[in-house]
Structures are given as structure tokens and as C-alpha cells.
Image (cartoon, rainbow, N blue to C red; front, side, top):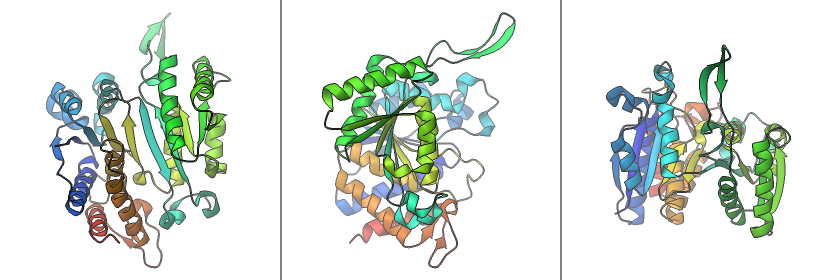
Amino acid sequence: MPKICVFPGDGIGPEVVREALAVLRTVEEVSGRRRFETEEELLGGAAYDVHKVPMTEKALALAKSADAVLLGAVGGPKWDPLPFEVRPERALLGLRKELGLFANLRPAKVHAPLLDASPLRRELVEGIDLMVVRELTGGIYFGEPRGVRVIDGVETGINTEIYTRPEIERVARVAFDLARKRSRRVTSVDKSNVLEATELWRRVVTEVHGREYKDVELSHMLVDNCAMQLIRRPKQFDVVVTTNLFGDILTDEASMITGSIGMLPSASLGGKVGLYEPIHGSAPDIAGKGVANPLATILSIAMMLKYSFDLPAEAALIEEAVERVLAGGFRTGDIFREGPGVRRVGTKEMGEKVREAIRKRP
């Protein structure tokens, strides 16, 4: 029986994960597929509060033994004063590294019923469906040397941007393979006019394209221009591949184009076990109030079914149910706008509406 390791995490994580797992059970119910086994463990701040570390050996072993991992969110101001090495975010970075998850897939899709939720004009965002492939285990987040130290009597912060040819090649292939299933267009984003590490990035991506993917159109864009173009003309993009740091920033920007960061799922792939999580944070200011948007976590379950379990039909059940719920006018606070037929709902009711839509599928 397939096994899913569940890390509810911090803040709103447990609330949105609860609704997402209930949606998974509903998919099992209507599809007649065998039941997934799930097992939960603490991660992030919740783990630190109990074990004084953000990820225990038991938690890591559970993740490695599973077929997929579902994560809610980690972190929050409560743990910001902790030493850097035991902050909740270190658990997430460590998990990605230990599982070999080098490619983070972050779709940014504008749902038709939410066109008015985007800060951009309707004509700019209507029909947007792009995928950002973010390199996840290299770059400045992991490069050495790093740290804060005194050099020649001056306190100095150090981080190192470093990429190797194999790291670039493997994430480029992920992007090109995805593009072959979409519109066969890839934009590689770098800062090659300033950073030598991304000068290598551009050269290696170009070489992989020329050797293996001539059927895919490749273009290059500097990251500052890309940030502008995402706002100016976002529909020009299909698959975007970029570094760890740039991907982190650009995907948050792309999420707001769609109306809310609470709508976007993600998949981290590359090793035997994929990790699925919403791209939003733990939102401690609304934790426990029952108002968080669970749709990004629910859509992360859809990505899990598609990429880890090869169940595209079951994934489509969820995606189509979410579309119907939004078309029905149901909104959590982050995507709510006053209007005819629009109704504000909480976390639990939004999850219930998705489950109801799955049961009543056409």
C-alpha cells in the first residue's frame, strides 16, 4: 500500500493539511482505488518545541521510507530568535537535501473565476498557465563558505553562489522534458552579465538544449528583466527554469499575479520520494482562526497523485473540483472580493465544498 509521510508543520499547516488529506480520502472513495497509508510526524517549529531540533532522525527516516511527503508549512516569528542552525526552515532545507529533491515545480495558473483577484488587468492575466522549475539543492542557499565572522576586525556576512555542471544539466532536463508535454518553450533565467556562476548556467543550459532538445524553443532572460516581464507581459512565459535564489523570488511574484499565494501548490522532485507543499508560509497571524485557504495544499495533493503515483485521472478530479467550487462563488478571505454570487467561507467549509464537488463530478 502506498505510504505518504505527513508533516503538518507550523501555523496554518495543520489546518490546511487536514482538509487536503480529507480530499484525498474522498478521491479514494469515488475512484475505488486502494487506500493510501499516511503517517504523521513533527517538523519545523513544532518539532523544535518538543525535541529541540527542527527535524529528528525519526522524521527523516519516515520521509525516506515513504512514497511521497506532504508538508503544510514551517516557521514563524516565535522561532526567529533561535540560533540559525535550529530554526524551522533548516528542517525544510535539510529535507530537500537528504531526499535529493533538486527540482521544484511551481505552477502559476490563473483560475478563470479569480481573474478579478489579480492586481493586474484582466487582459494581462487571462489564460496564464506557466510553470517555474527552480533548482532546489544548490546555489547560494547551500554554497560554502557561509556564515558570519570577523575578518580583519570587521564583522562580515558570507554566502557563496556555486553551481556545478551536473547540477545545471539535471534541472535543465527536467524543464525541457516538462516543456515537451506543454507548448515546447523554455525560458532560462540567470544573471550571466554579472555572476560567473550563472554565466556557466546559461552556457550549460544552452549545451543541453543543443544536444538533446532541439525540438524545444529556448530563450534566455536576465532575472531583473524577467521580474519586470512577469508583470508587464506574463503570458509570454510557459516553462521557466532558474536558480535556487531567483526561483524563490520569482515564484512568489508569479503567485501574486494569480491573485493569491494561497492558491499555488508545488512539487519537489529528483529523488525516489517527492515532496509536495503549498508555496505559502505558516501565516501565524491567522493560525487557528479557521480562515486559511486550503486550496494550495489540496492542489498539492493533485500534483502528488500525478507525479509520484502516476494517477492523472485522480489528479484531474481534484483540479476540476477546485475549478467548480471557485466558479460557484466560494472564496476564503485571501481571494474574496464583494460581488454577486460570491460567498466568503472558512478553511473547513472550503475543503467540504471541494469534497462535495468531487462526489458530484459530471
